[in-house]
Image 1 (cartoon, rainbow, N blue to C red):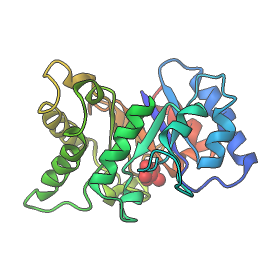
Image 2 (image 1 turned 90 degrees about the vertical axis):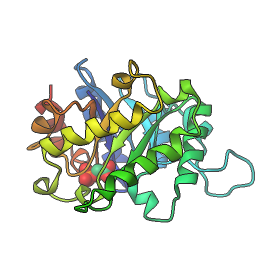
Image 3 (image 1 turned 45 degrees about the vertical axis):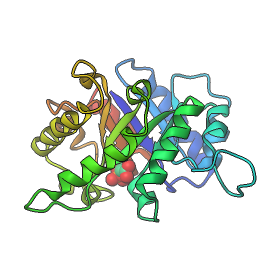
Image 4 (image 1 turned 180 degrees about the horizontal axis):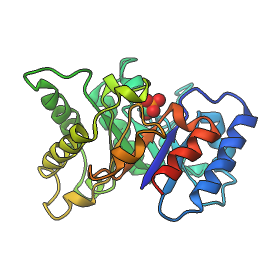
Amino acid sequence: MLIVANWKAYVETTEKAKRLYRTAQRLAANKKNEIVLAPPAPYLGYLAIGNRSKVKFAAQDVSVVEGGAATGELTAHAVRNVGGTYAVIGHSERRARGETDVEVSQKVKHACGAGLIPILCVGENERDAEARYLNHLRAQLKAVFDMLTPKERLHIVIAYEPIWAIGKSASEAISPRDLTEMILYLRKILGEYVSAKQVPAVCILYGGSVEPGNIRALADATGIDGFLIGRATTEPVSFTALVKAIS
Ligand code: PGA
């Protein structure tokens, strides 16, 4: 499984970043899982540039601009050049700050162009009885997939993160049954952009209140390929427990 540890802004000291990196190295020794760390930008550079381990690195975001006179931006090429492999793009916490579908699709393009694998986050705010949230997901995927070449469409990871389930306790995570349905629905949409044979090859992650106590049930029989996990990956004990539960 692919486990992406989104440290968000929880990690603010070098000591803590190094401790979690050591934990990740231990966890990555088990070949069953690929461990990806998404640290805040300074720690991404600090850890990724000297990384010789099996742990991979992701940026938490990349900028819309590609370089030049753009103070404060984090370009996809810079992430790639310090040793990043992935870039989380379109996270709901970025979208909540005004990021649009157009910007998300530009960022995904830049990430692909720089040789990064985009981890595209999609997810509904809430669920309504008329199932309008399904159209919302479809639109988020369309905005990006319409812009991608056939080859790029196969090199993108989808992270399904329903906003109502993010950052809460495990009791509010999605149920395995609902997750199974959502994965099927997402694969159905993907079938509009890649061939039927290629659909199963697209990697789909789930994120939102994944914890040691619920990860096993979410992993079992839901058709999920991995997880994008925030809070529970920012302490060595819970990070270890998460990965052990699915190993
Ligand atoms: P959480 O965050 O695991 O803390 O709910 C997941 C995410 O936002 O990627």
